[in-house]
Image (cartoon, rainbow over all chains, first blue to last red):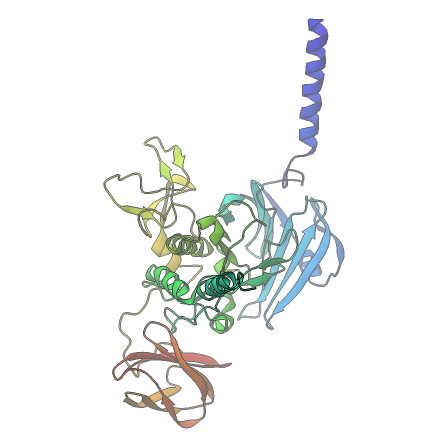
Length: 141
Length: 318
């Protein structure tokens, strides 16, 4: 009888572990590396998309979602907000600005409120990367 | 009906007394500064930001009286007197500020859409340029003006890139992410980026939430890159402006109640008293202009002028 109880309990525990593993919060369920490089062409495409979008930002990073809005803030700055579908509803906010020297700069973040981590778009030597960051450093109370 | 009259009267009286949802008075802490923090007490509809996971957020007006808003504004502004930064309740001032040097703090009663917090901000959003606001939830602060001012200052700090000031033990293990100034029990001071509610709170240089060894100098971070706000110039000499359009308008006569000036172009102007209260505004035409100051016989005023080409400002002593 005790053996049966142990087997049932063990099975239940295993099941709950498997289920929780399937339901890991964002960004656990996206391919994670120290940094994911994204091309400026892919970023630029987002500013020309409307409605549902499916975009391969990099080999390891596909974005499925809906463009929530696209705002022009004067002639030099525009922002696009994407509600993701394959990242548990995390929001990608992306800004595109024209600097005084005519170059284009992108800034952005991919966040889901109250999750432990988020992704930040950073630029280094002309290349853009999404890097993972603890969300308490991005959103603070 | 007769029996109901006292109740109707009482309701009317309560309405008059509680008629607190007045539009916020137009206040500015330092109009010459381009970098701007807009304290929005008037309610707002927010869309298209990282806060909108569940759609549009309709933030109600703070419901605070003009006197309370003014008190809170002054309390917050006291913490920023060091910086070349204008705090304003005027949406037009916010609209004119450089997009990479501005932020909006929405002070609203209800933050249920976010959760049980007194406020929330995106760290560093002051320079994002994408209109991401920060929030202060007054119901969670028991509508206490002192707490609201402290929380708003704290959230502004976050938008300017500051992390929390934290408390660590001697081994560097975090005791509390938010320091309440416990490291000196004889002191009545606490960090603004910790728990700023119960002691005299100020910017400090101390261990941030990033680690005991990560020393955060609040004032240096606020003033420095990427905010590039800098510190205020202590002395503003009439006639010696401090930005590119400072020579565009020349004050010729300064008398109580009246200012005469020559403008090199067409601008709009705004005249503030030294506390930042807007006295008057209007257009400046090229050439001679006379502005009625409508102020006390002796006063220190700040005249700001602006157009699409630029802006300038000048302190005037009448």
